[in-house]
Amino acid sequence: MSHSNRTPEPGGTVADAVKGNWVDRIAPPATRPYLRLSRADRPIGTWLLLMPCWWGVALAAAADRPRPEDLWIAAGCAIGAWLMRGAGCTWNDITDREFDARVARTRSRPIPSGQVTVKQAAAWMVVQSLIAAAILFSFDISAIALGIASLGLVAIYPFAKRFTWWPQVFLGLAFNWGALLAWAAHAGSLGWPPVLLYLSGIAWTLFYDTIYAHQDKEDDALIGVKSTARLFGARTGPWLGLFLLLTVGLMTLAVLAALLPGDDPLALALGLVAPWALGWHLLWQLRQLDTEDPDVCLRLFRANRDAGLLAALFLAAAALA
Image (cartoon, rainbow, N blue to C red; front, side, top):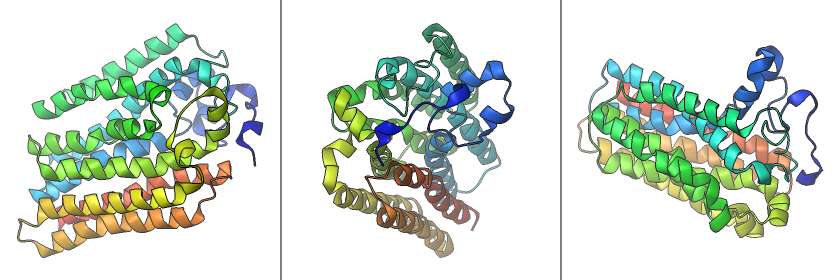
């Protein structure tokens, strides 16, 4: 099925939003364009931004010991992920408004469809960022510094597809920063385990966002937008297999670096299940993949919430062991 045949949905809804989502059903009409800018009608991005945060705090707690403040770190990261994903998507829509107007899947977004102006979108981006900053400043000073440093990656990402065939790398750098930040919020410093976890997350992002990008490859080719989906083409399968192996291997090294120095074999065993549970889910996705079917690509992309949660669950179990 050709992705370019999709048309904007009626009533201001966005073409690739989950049908019957809460924004379209119950949100006050005046708020809907802003919630759509934040992708509140498409929550998968928030989950994908949140998962590395939960991995980071859980692995840090497993390496040290759980603390009461870890609950706030996990909750604060969840709220912050929603806000910063919303601010990042708003910035992305501002910078990509001309491209979005030329792509079937995105021309129904609030800015190209005329639901909001650029100035209104910019104001909404600032509001979300300020609330997220208030949460960030409740963390350790090292986490605060890391949070501020991430803004450069967020700012650069929307432009990456204009100058590189690997924009998914820039997305991975930004989306997995929470692994470093959440570890630092617990531990007060960094080390090899969070760095390896961060690299694992980048490989995971290359996996799922290449699948996602296959939805737009026809339109992207017409307007000159680059992506790993266009770069890999028919060789996507082997490349995704490589990213799968990197995801599992790097997360395994992160767990070993964090927990092997300790004397708790149960925590180590549970921690080591995390990358392999994630890896099996990615293998299932790879076997289901049809890069020529946009609906399959979108379904598998969304399935990465469950893949990330599997890893988070076992890392949390390791922390509580």
